[in-house]
Length: 358
Image (cartoon, rainbow, N blue to C red; front, side, top):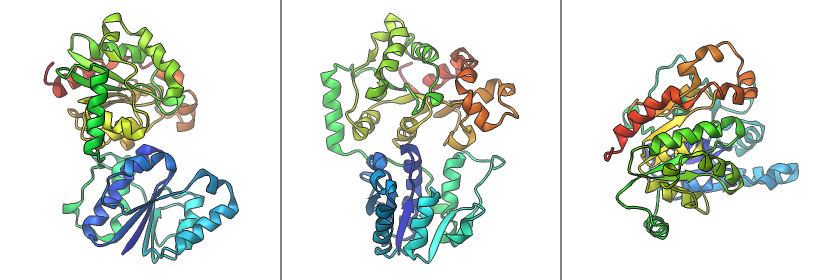
């Protein structure tokens, strides 16, 4: 069989959707599985032998109706047997419709029967899960293919080459990273302002992590976020600053993945960095934005290796019965009522469980 899996959007979404490919390849080892995504997410697919081809839907193509329809007919010429559209928006509705595939799978919307042969209703918050609904709902899209539940693997995976590991170790030597210390990655800033834990609070989190522990701390941030990163660094204590390698950064997403592969744990804002760390089998402590549904994105939560906190865990009265859009609009003011002292003991517990030297 020939499959096309479509997942646009951000790195975390794309990475989690690779479990669809991994499990299809188990059932159909001789199949061809192609994956369509935006250019900014291609790096998380590198090395995955369950994906035969990556198809990039570029911004330039999306901006032009002529280019988009040209692209659609190029996809049609590949003659897919089945399409799984995880993204399920207008542009991918059209792509799927014109593939000519006999099996077209997506999540149910009121109009999707026009485009898809299988329209599956997402699990809601009433479903009990240790995987997280982001995982469960992607596994749901495999239902039409009758894969034995006993062989289903729900864990996204990243792959790092020997050269990438060697280059990272050389980078650590250049920055004089103490090999005897545990290395903690801090997911310092969110992908958006309303997904970013207040900077002064994050500085206190970093201080908690550094306090009395023989650790090396790395910051994850983009170059366009460097001013906010400096604000956090400057707000940390002098003792904490001595443990931070502020300038030890990757040049691109692959570099970050390789650096994360050498770290012991990750702590910080929910987002792509956390999802990538989990795919590398690294313990994670995640701080969720008030408007993000924890039950969806708190994947593989076990209270030991993967722990997360959300204001709803501590002050549910601030958001109960408040519309999602209203919470998102006022995320910063809600975040201000979520100081790190509320979960300081949970950070300590997480570190005790996952850093042997403590």
